[in-house]
Length: 63
Image 1 (spheres, helix red, strand yellow):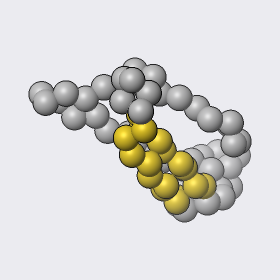
Image 2 (cartoon, helix red, strand yellow; image 1 turned 180 degrees about the vertical axis):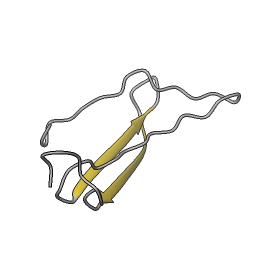
Image 3 (tube, helix red, strand yellow; image 1 turned 45 degrees about the vertical axis):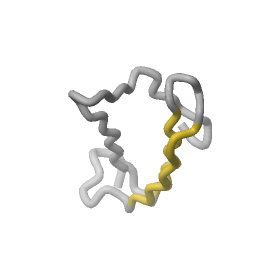
């Protein structure tokens, strides 16, 4: 997927339920993920940067 933005447009949260975003690096190189969260009006709510090391046991053909 490279550096092209990918969107999760169906994520929601309310007082009765909490939304979580999980990320996993299945590759052989470290990966940085930039997460940006917006409310339903499109206003920025929060931003997070996650740095992930390579997966310790990459799948077949990955390492």
